[in-house]
Length: 222
Image 1 (spheres, helix red, strand yellow):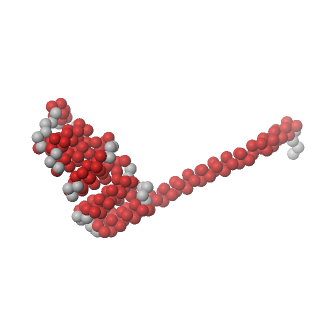
Image 2 (spheres, rainbow, N blue to C red):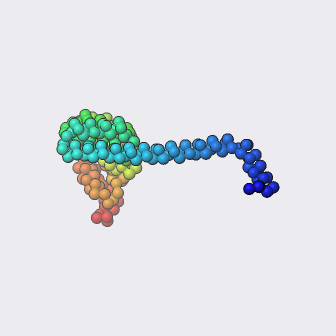
Image 3 (spheres, one colour):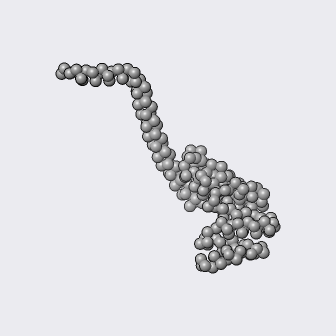
């Protein structure tokens, strides 16, 4: 089919534009396709990792039920080395720490908790720090336990951190500091949190007094 004059001008204009910009356009398309391919590949990798991590986590849970501490620790270590970026690794390490603690394997418990404290997401990290501080307190490593808590700065855990700090200070017989910690724990703990009553009991047991406004608020909420 013959082209009319207007179509020939359009073709000439297109050819001229392509000569000026065609190479750049090709590279833009290549980059865009490569980016999409990389994104799709990453999504597939993430799904595969999650599925494999889930299978290993199931094995770990079975070992917990069987009370096989050695197998639990191996599974948690495998999870850390192979799937460290998944939430499964953090959950597995916390579960392995509990299993080790129940088996009186405090060294393994501390190792698992320290891994989460070093590599975990914010919430998991603070949970690990609270539990690690508790293990260290049981070992009478009080200064080390307080050091662990010093870096636990997630606002929603402020009450729990202050409460654990108070426990450690009581164990050190630093009662004035412990009262300050328990008061901070009360201030940071929601009124409807059942743990508030235990904090009050501990505070009063070491000669502390629950602030009047706090006591009235608790009575009103009851």
